[in-house]
Image 1 (spheres, rainbow, N blue to C red):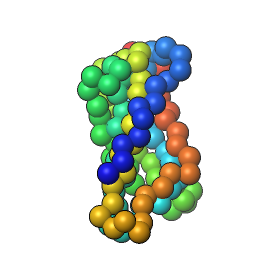
Image 2: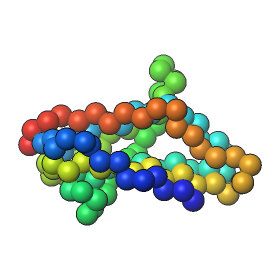
Image 3: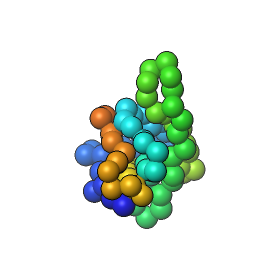
Image 4: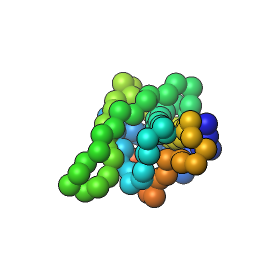
Amino acid sequence: GIVSTTFSVAAPVNMGGAYQVRFEGTIPEDTTLAIYVSANGGTSWNSVVYTYDETFDIQEGTGNIGVPGADVWVKIAMNTTDLNVTPTIKWFMLLFNEGA
């Protein structure tokens, strides 16, 4: 499978524990797409559980890091068992509240 380069938020932030992920993409049969969020520079990762929102034709999920952090990273893992199909992401958004 393919795991993205880890993306770091450019500026230091004070991320509270809760976050929301939204993205538009495709996840065909025989493929998987996993999203992970870290608030401590990649030392530990929280797996995002997401569902399809028919109203907006997007995937969205929420999670909670459990502790506030200032070094927010995101990584995306895409896998396929059929070399003719792959998951895709058109756009991706991470929303979080600042503060502890």
